Length: 198
Picture 1 (cartoon, rainbow, N blue to C red):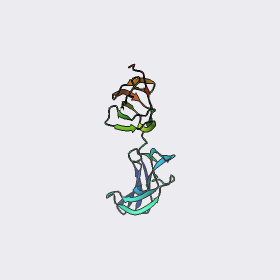
Picture 2: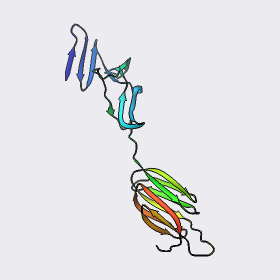
Picture 3: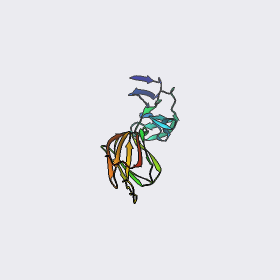
Picture 4: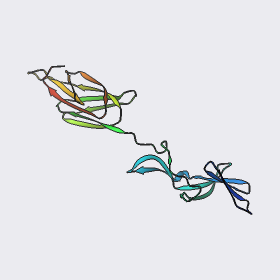
């Protein structure tokens, strides 16, 4: 604890707990961050989780009412407030991974994915010969795929072959297939096949 006094004056400063309280004629004042001057420290437009104070405001330490005096928050000032962790005001970005699905067929495909252990749910319809890319928070997902397989009037029975992260499954006509506990990134590739092996 540091004490500093000015001789022959009614003004004295007391530093306690990293805050200097100044007493003038019995009224104690201190300095704090001016709320409107607090900003998030960013790198490449991404929050770092730290807050930066540009300006300090003086306030009555007994009533917490601002006096109207302000000053720059400079490292050379004894009241300086260094950048501090504030992940509430300056939240860190949520890490994301990618789900990429391609429908290499002339049939419609529906895709549902649930983040395991949460209520997070997403749904995508993928039109014929199109793909979809979705950024999702990192985690493990349960994925359900529905392909409405339309059988040709003649010829072999048509199925859909689905590959998720190297695991291949056959989806029969009008049925769904469920992949449990798939971790991002997820690559899905669906295309028609005449194979009937499950």
